[in-house]
Image 1 (cartoon, one colour):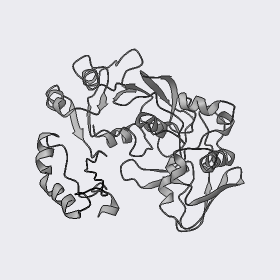
Image 2: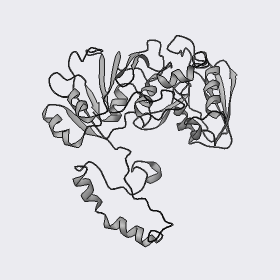
Image 3: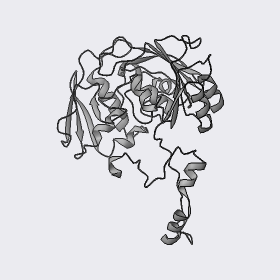
Image 4: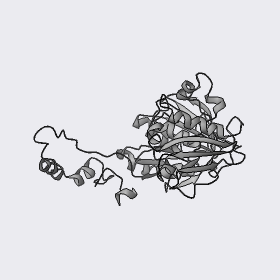
Length: 340
């Protein structure tokens, strides 16, 4: 199964960071997967990344945790995992004039967090205040601080984002500001708990258990009334970083999962011969040469060009990647509109 198809079928809201492998395998799965849940209403997935990184959406760079957070939390606006087009998530609509310097958002009526409490404008302001706070270092800050001046409450269900200048590209970045309940994460020590795995959002799935270095489980949130409903009643994501046991978990009649990502090229034919579907998607790995241009001979552009021309990139793709790759023409992926 293509990694983006996985995101779509699980009801993911997410960005490219979610389950970002180049090759994935899937099967119809056994009737019962393992002792942490199974059956046709449960998806058991094997993820090739650790689940013991930070779960704080404003901080995390963990592929596993970001993927999970895209199921648990919502932004005012999120982006489609396939088309990358923005869509209204917690907000009722995307601003009609994205070139304006003030964007007004009304929260979806009846939206609640997984503890049943309503999502309010105070929660939105709470998250953006943390992101924009110059005294608080978060990874999200780098995506907002240069263009977003402030976020202010208008009423209980309405907020305004005030921009420093017109920045239509900021609409897509709003998916990085996951709205978190103030009544949960304003408590002493709560941000430390978020790093360790505490996750309470308003998305289609709620976290039901978290076992670092083992697995994380999810259940469809019955109170979710947004646009991207859960496709499964339950999900169990196993974290298996080593390739061999990850492939073994998806293989054979007693397979313990329906889908795995990060499949080694050497195992593709083995899995296909066992009746599994194996498909690839464009990954984000970009191999490159780096030169110190302060030193000779790399201060000469002709030398740098010559080294690039001397490398047979087609042969590298054929031999090292078994044909699963393509020579790059820039640092941007071919489908990126800026690379057209």
